[in-house]
Image (cartoon, rainbow, N blue to C red; front, side, top):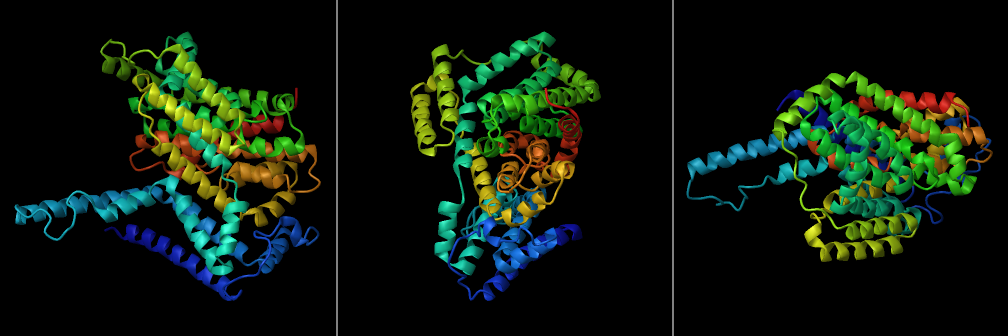
Length: 517
């Protein structure tokens, strides 16, 4: 195996055991059981609003609660792991290839003895484990197990249980699972495709026309059907209309980066569709007119500019893909199967509307989801198979992320508080790349004395940076789970940042330099 592979693996294992050592040190300083009381410590309880510099504030908070440092170190390791998922996939392929060669060798040596030692000839256990560690949707869940283990070791099982039960809100992960499964159903997807085809027909339903329609109209729909639903529909349509034609790697990353950024800002026309807006709308009194006046129209301009710029940059690739699509079809229309009765489509759209309406009440939207599954089974001859694996993996990803995110406020809050208007915008954009943007805006509501300008800056920055990484915005894992099969070695985090950088700059300019209506 190459030396570089050993180096990366050794680094990762070193960081892992470093996390365990940090936990042990923290536990040793607190007798292994910790103290009773609130956990995590409420931010107001630190009493350090006049402590001086940010560094002094952070030092004081670590001294008051040493587990702050442990939780953030484990979170940092989880982020590093997301950057190494492609490497884990590569290791998995190497292990499986070696296993297959070993199986062939054993069969040549003992052709009548297929499984003498009880080992499976079909599956490499080590390879499957590495595949699992290479699934970006599983990363934060795996490290959440380590986090809860560390918390139990340091503070006791009751504290860990109380944190999961009362300190973490899993409503958003559950909602994303439900809305993603509904949005990917055949009747809903056909309806969305029919609506967008009406727009794409203005460009004779060419590859470029479909691409423009999906990346401009799809994200704006997120303001009304929620961003996770818009992401699911847009990603599925892009898979069929664009990625199946095998664009160049550069164009593939530019498109997924543009999709993530457009979806992140496309939900700002309303006050209920984008998670980072939802966190502040009620507390700050932002309604739909306010959102359109301050955010929505700017987001639309940014989406159009960024998408059209990409269109002109990659116009030669569109011509190549168009020729490839015509050659593949051989001049024939692609059959889409029998039509879906209108009443079935209407019923399933009503299920989605109900889910959006009760998005903050898990008992109601999960109950509605069970009725939806029963209805889908009763009308199975008009449905495609509902694959719950991608939605469940996305839900697992988000559940792990919010579990970690609930313990990061101790350092994010003083950082946000220390910044002025433009630095706050830039800071929120950068922080969003390493933590869910809804967590950033939620923590902003806890900072006393925020002016309207600072409120605008932190929300605008959070939605602008929502496409830079998979963890930056809650709908991103949904898009990744649908499109990652077009990236055989996994989606490279650095390539994703590169693909999202230009539209992020465009959105930054729109939000920073355009006034209100």
